Image (tube, rainbow, N blue to C red; front, side):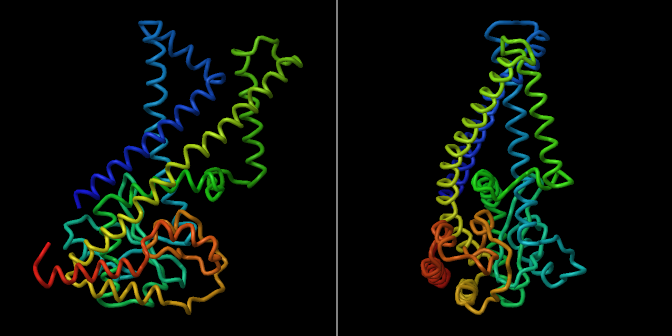
Length: 354
């Protein structure tokens, strides 16, 4: 467990380093348009020179990094639940499910997370974490497929992701890859009116950037040379921003996949020890892995963020092709290997060995 904790901490630190690089790159690319703000901050400081320059970057990067991390966790959590059509449910609607989670959380000395149910026939589950707490998501298919000790085992597995804090780290690691792949669009949920609002916002932003460019372009505002200079500057910013986003996403994908395998083994082991019944989790894995009669009419797309978080890597999508699944399957250990390790845990529990 100490090894996993160190690995989670290292992954988190590296993810924060990538986020800092993203924020710093954005600040550098936006420097031409941030010049008025920079000059205002510099003029208000009691010192100048290099100290003022450092203070400006600290004033920009520190709050921007905090806001970026908070936004990633909040947006990824909300979007992940929306993609699988999940909603938070209370004990009055799912009393048996809440009783199970409360009981298991008490055994684990853990604050019970929020519970959400996804309107999907595919049996699966996952846990997501934010700075304000965690949510365990289960599908209707899981609740109808499993029961008794096997359902307890799966819920315990998800609670261990919450207890180990890897649910939060993996939620953070899901944002940049999904954004780069076009699976997330932060503007969709905040712009009423669809493409019309998007275009209007783009025109406003472009107009403001054009005006602010007067600080860095020598030509008169409105002249042909000024407009051409602005278009070149804008194109370079967009081009290098897109390239930088792709470059920064690559290590995040590697970090997420590397941690995903280790965290699944650790959650399996911890869940088996919590319930004292490794055979129940083995039975759940075998049942869900062999659920070949899943309905094939659900047209919702399963995206990488959900599949990477799930108990089993097929996500909640019933139509995904084998090619799309093969990428995410590599982030999960093979079910046969998980079962083999659980059988080893069972032997350890029987003999009293650690």
